Length: 276
Image (cartoon, rainbow, N blue to C red):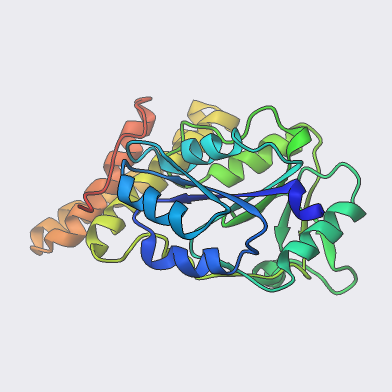
């Protein structure tokens, strides 16, 4: 069966409230590897006892999207793998349509669902389009083309952009298929109990990853030119919100500036949100 050629990899971090809907949308004859970014043994025991097709790996701490996905992908023994966010939900024919497309296209590297990206792409003539980038919530891998996967220097953001750029540099083919439907709620993989901490985390890592990505592919000076307006903007807003006693906004823009400066200085992506 083609289903025996696929393993689904899901990275989680305090995602219990969203994960169940995702799992229930996956056919129970497909193997699933969940990589939980913690040492939550109860989570592992509960999920593996409820679902016979799931193996849960605990990373021991929050290692981020890239590292955790690589852990899962390196455990995959099947021909194909689907990296899936825990807030994504498959339609009834999603898996079948992935296989239909995989069988149509010779030596593809990556395939993504086309339903939520149709606005940015012209599907008028073809249901399948060759593209340069995919969104990270659902990526279908042809495992035979990969020796390594995500750049583990990223903790959050730009991982899939970097992956796709690496594929294109190796003359690999990336596709979107309009017939492949996956619902994605977006920005909801973590329980939203601490919105301020999540916003600080988002700003810090977006800025760190932005500079790192441009430095990696364009060099330090061009990356600095790209990021410089954001440095000035962050400094101005830290001062402004400090003077107007808006501590929340001040702290958010301080995180933006900290992420930029740490990336410029070549420091690792170390910031972690406080969600306990």
